[in-house]
Image (cartoon, rainbow, N blue to C red):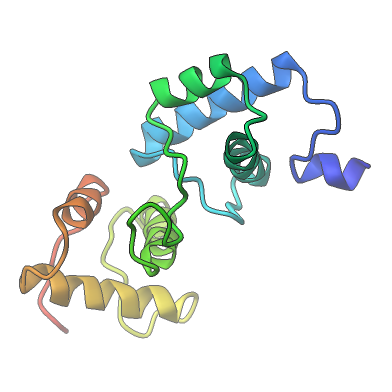
Length: 158
């Protein structure tokens, strides 16, 4: 039971814990600009599981109208970025890399992940690809806005 609680499972969800998670989600949105907490979010796995649980409850009509209104008030989207709701299937991995880039920036003070970055070579390749797409105007306005929000700057290939 303790392990289930550690990962955010609530066998008897109560009002206080629900509002606590909503406040955590509001904080996440202030920091990241969206409510799409990725599964496996290392900084707060309980929040990631809670967000997923809200979507599941919503789809099965088990979420009160009060809770639906509160989540929508802060900009919660009921479809996760996994190909549902008109989003491309690669959106989930794109948002995962955005979160990794934000983590990199917190640790390094910038978004210029060097090629050959051994700690996360996939992120290095992704950043290089974003630079190429950014310079050739092949990114959606939503993606450009998100990259610019976190301080991304297109740099020449090095």
